[in-house]
Image (tube, rainbow, N blue to C red):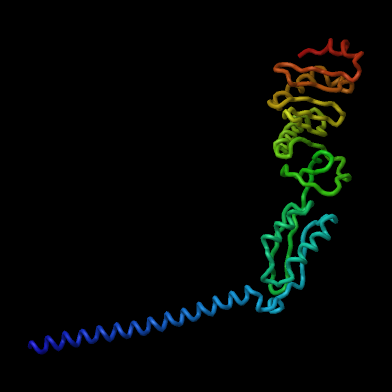
Length: 269
């Protein structure tokens, strides 16, 4: 019995050693194959990166499709930008960089570029939609963002806003709110100017200027509306400027100073 026990122990040990040797050889083979594959991939990536494979081996862009309204000012520049970025083939088009570059064109609000296998590039253009002029050189889109095309002469009928560029969106919001307040009176707001002290001046289509200062614009316009309904509506053509920067009142500047005393005598708030 002792012999059998020893024999079994030795036999069990030999089986474990055989299994270990078998596992080690198989594992080593797998590792060797994986290492060889990784080496090939690394070598190929460096080979391609260093342009050992000519660009003609890659599918070339043969067609560029443009969808959306494109201003004539941007058309030729868009072609130049696209041509410079498709020469290396289908897979080498820098999509994000191309979209950003196209969005930098004066009349392009946003651009979306997509590859269509095997040889087509599609470009979706979202054009700028101007809602106001910004001084004498720029335009403001519907999001209150500024852009500066080479000419804005054809947009002279748009209202004009002006101030510090960093405050453009704030001024757009003030303009929109003020326009909605004045609209029920039949008064059209044509411009908004903010000076260096952030004092705002609203210009109506009839040339009347409302100076509202740097705060409480809504309340001040409401005060003007009260004065308009009580008295100013019938004398509006004689008014040059209304100063609303006072706490509880307003000051009226008349176009004809000789009428000032007689007209103001009927004004009560």
